[in-house]
Length: 386
Image (tube, rainbow, N blue to C red):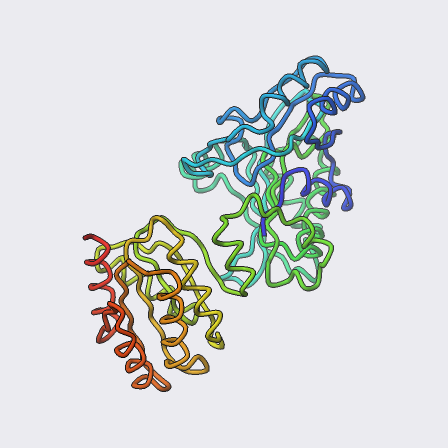
């Protein structure tokens, strides 16, 4: 689950991470009030779940409270398009108004889960900012890495080694070590999947401040953090993904034309791979789970047909706990309820497969049964093309 920058900073304050002064608002007049309270030039930042906001016109400097209000009026309600939003963009519903700082240098810090190592890893670069990807691509040694045990935290010698690599001045070294330790504690305590500070500012008077903050929380751990669930912003998520979550379905919107419904994450990934192999592109990842019932199957199918990009549907089910006849009944219900006009290819194997196929044949619906996964993918891709 992604959260907004201002929410991430509210969480990080609890771990003594140094941050600029400021707060978020959805009212232009309050933006002016915040700027007046800060008593200096401010930055007005659009709050959406995407990077590249400055390049898209969502980050503006204001030298007076009146100017802060003017920028807030222009940014609030705008559809902000960045390289991460896609061409449809995101509507800005809140801005963060913060004090400006005299920046000497920008630094990059992040903590992510290294799944191969089974541990979190700190990533650090002496040069940060919007071009961090290009910097890392040009120089493989630009990023330092330190793996740590989340139960023990980042060790002192590791933090010192990172600070040395960041080339911090002596006056900022102690603050840098403390900051790294705080970020590691926050990452573990929040059950985060990603914590990114880009940029971390080294100011002219050699202080450190997190100018931006991005936190992605692990959905699977939210049962331990009911207070963090309240930070979810449904406006920032795909409507289809929100609808899927209401039915306990694992759905992610992609940019292809073949809609997929599969039971089991591994089988879902294999299905997407073979669609690519057959020359097509999957329109989504949709795992109904091994124990889906007839109603969940129907809901999953209805989500697929709502996606305007879907030109054909491929259902790939290995019947175990989810029996093939249950799947077939749910699909027939949904196809009739939605007045299905899209080509539908189904590949089923496993428990009650013959009963399931008979339900599909008896339905009278234009359903293509496939013999194997490769055959199913080829038929679905051909149908999507025309």
